[in-house]
Amino acid sequence: MDKEIQKSADFIKNAKKVSALTGAGISAESGIAPFRGNNGIWEKYDPEEYAYIDSFLKDPAKVWQMIKELIDVIFEAKPNKGHLALAEMERLGKLSSIITQNVDGLHQAAGSKRVIEFHGNNMRLLCLKCGKVVKTEKELYKEIPPKCQCGGILRPDVVFFGEPIPQRAITESYAEARSCDIMLVIGTSAIVTPAAEIPVIAKDSGAKIIEINLESTPLTNYIADISIMGKAGEILPEIVKRL
Ligand code: OAD
Image (cartoon, rainbow, N blue to C red; front, side, top):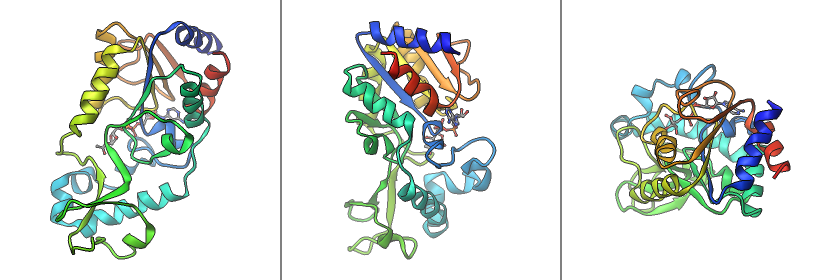
């Protein structure tokens, strides 16, 4: 593993532009459960019933039970060594952007400045009636579903299944993918599109792909030039130390 970490650091040192794509795995060490696998969110909550926008619109109170649980965890969570290492890479001028599928705001909390939120953010709520966006506060969702001052139901400002990715996030992420020469792909199962296409676009545009994950993914051995099997919170600080 040490060889791969060193090779990754060397690639990054010599690169003109490095971008990162992150998924739920980078926040696992902050106590936020990933979606898939043992104890994953989709094991407890059937995505058919909870993840689709139609399910939300049909029964907002029911889906809010899950959202409340997820947001309560985010309020307690702190950025971990993985988030902090990426923020440090940016400060060192070695990371141009983070494209994240996470909706927890922990990259920003760690100090990262350029974060593209591909699936939105649970720490913002959006009124279904008047469109107002408010910061998520515990007070607001004491009763569910929470309501806006105008009486409309508030939803989290995240992308449900069946909804498009915000256009700006698509444009900016694809531009990053096409222009970086290294892409770090961290803690994502890389099966949910269109996010999973981002490393493929980067690879097609000539970038080298460095994957950090506990286990292999569809990218391993096909798209990834280097796959480091381990915890993001342990591997990323090691890479940054060697830059
Ligand atoms: P997943 O839960 O699908 O995958 C998490 C990945 O992180 C897995 O491949 C794990 O092996 C890996 N992992 C877990 N702990 C790790 C650690 N400490 N260090 C490194 N890797 C670790 O999460 P995502 O890929 O983010 O979309 O899921 C993608 C999308 O599917 C989510 O954004 C969400 C979900 O449905 C929407 O809600 C629209």
